[in-house]
Length: 141
Image (tube, rainbow, N blue to C red; front, side, top):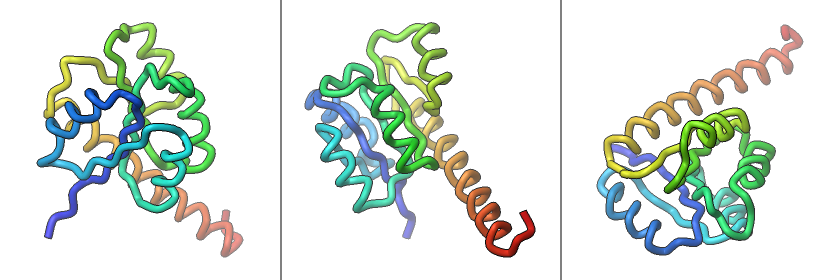
């Protein structure tokens, strides 16, 4: 049985959550967090392949969310969603360490291409971290 990628969406916008669920439901398993506390709980109880974070996340800025996720889950790719971003915002997101920035029109193919790249990147980072840990344990690092 094929396992669908597990995606976590952080947004306070119920309409956006419903739109993305409708767009992606046949391709991914989508979880939804309304705030940072719920995000932490969901990340702590499940293995996710990527986090989609809404740019205008109201209780915290997307870059604060990114910083927290990078500290606690360094292999988790964070993809920022923005309805109004341009090249300057894309550069800002990339320099902060996010995996990518997506803007409308949202299409399943766009999300799936970015998700595929993010999952491959996450797997590669995981393998690299395991190799580094193994070398440190054996003293060959």
